[in-house]
Image (tube, rainbow, N blue to C red; front, side, top):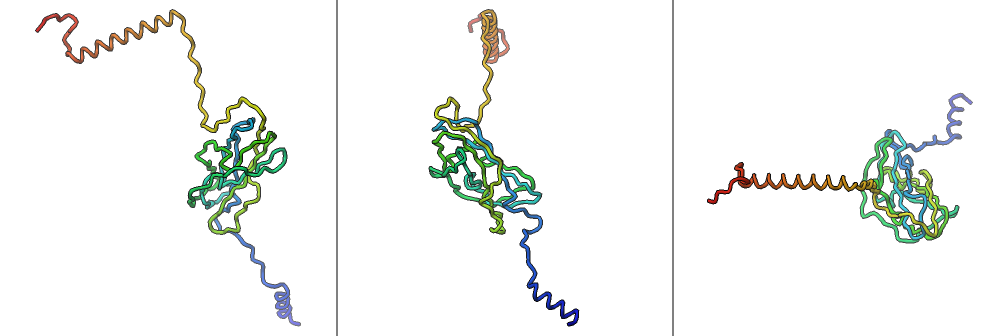
Length: 226
């Protein structure tokens, strides 16, 4: 058998070459998006609403196309209590609409305008005391290849909190307000000086208003009746 014939035979036995699927150059995929989760408090009471803040991070050096929806649609939560998986028990909040957007390379984008989001948005009302652990799975559809969606692999950090029967903690999801320092109580002498200063300022202001009404004439000494 000639050398050429041997080469043809080897190609036939080997079969057609394997083609490895690759995403287009310069584009990332949904698996490049990871979630960064924060929990507002380390301790909650039964009946309180736990609050989360979530950002999505493009971990690649490429742009990633994504359908932008509500937080509960873009990140699936995996919640465990004392090691056991917790199932949603109330109706979640779905997105009214969606739009295609892009994550820039290495971009971090907060969900829900960066505010604290009630965990009930994902359909959870936590009623059993215990140690809770939360992780996330970004639900990213890259727009060009549905096979690149990964809706099962954890791609986030882990956060946790303790749920107890009773707690004095404030579990509101409202924005945090910086507490102003309380004013120092004035001494009697300081209070009198403050009152005198306010009275003098009031007298000067009143005289200025009257002068502006009657002109520059010194009305305080003019007793002529016309």
